[in-house]
Length: 395
Image 1 (cartoon, rainbow, N blue to C red):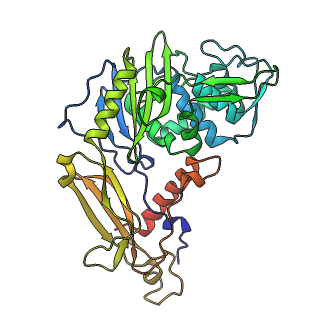
Image 2 (tube, rainbow, N blue to C red):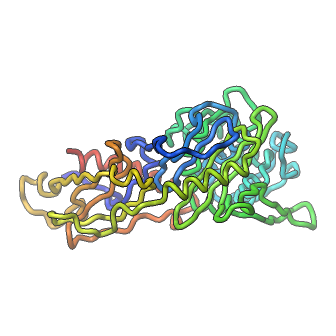
Image 3 (cartoon, helix red, strand yellow):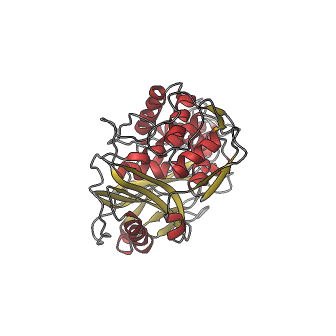
């Protein structure tokens, strides 16, 4: 009998983590917000659905928006209390800086705050060398993560975003990257911070960093994410905000009026694509003996609500079928009976498991309970879940 890992008992598969699930993009039935950006995108963080896109797959320079990838890779591959040392190559890096001293040591956590609040290029290089062994080694991790997330129009050449040939991304890819990163509790906490102080081993005064992201002070519910600028990339911005339990993230590349444009984009998303409860947790499925393993929410325009369909797929218990019908005292599926696929206009947008009535329904793993690796653990869970689905839930 095949041994089924306990991870199958986990609930909803986050759409943005699974390459097998298509991330839908809102149709142009609703007039999108006007922006001054060369390229722009708006995403619902929970579902990974892109709600608005303007030349969203156009490959452009992204300046310090690069540091979103730098931060999440560092969080997933190292410990927050690690001491990061400033090397000669990281010291006095050109562009924005924390003005770290040569040989100075700072915890990775504090250096991440400096990276994301003040966009320190010296911090980016120091972090990269610590985590990846060198900047080149860290860049390999960045591009590997981009491939894992499914960023098909992105390539990184450095951890800070200074202009370099072959270093680019798109508004759509950055939206997906941001949605992924915001599911990490450490990343989410850092980018929502307006002010941070950190010990200074060389002076009597502490470091004090004020977040460059004005959206945190300008927009109700704002909680991230990152500013960027170079002479070739021009003004770049990723912002996020949460209202009524829904978090959105907006991206603009080369936008001279980004603060106002982001406010309009976020307003648009909250007004026209609110999260709709499609299924409740432990809701009985009509004419069956199963209940839903958890609820399902999805951002939908009013005109789309009738276009989302549910498909129930039930499966024979593996524990019974693999023993020629002999009853087993232990069911390795933990009561898992199948799944409900959610489809919008015929495209799969998510899936929730269903369980036999009366069986134990384990709780979904919470990112806030994760270790310092945060979403990396959930990502591993999702990978395992895919493997289990292929064996347990295949037609």
